[in-house]
Length: 72
Image (tube, rainbow, N blue to C red; front, side, top):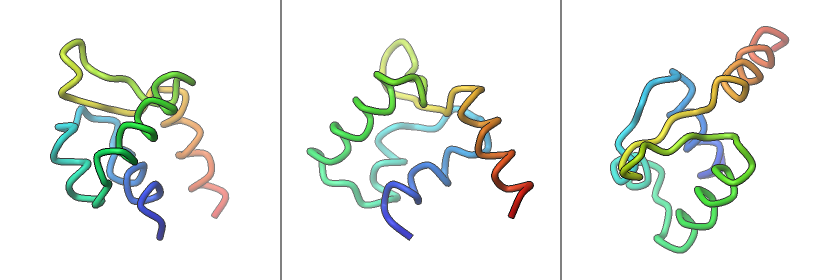
């Protein structure tokens, strides 16, 4: 499983997660974390808290992942 897959897998419960702890759990380098989070946030896949310390999947992204799991 790739680190991006691990990252998204950790967020699939739909709850807020501590951003730094989540980054550490998947082993992102600071540069990779910034690139991935910027991309996912810019295109509406994830939501960052107002203080940018927490992260969660957007509702539509979560629904998409749930539908995929139903098909597997």
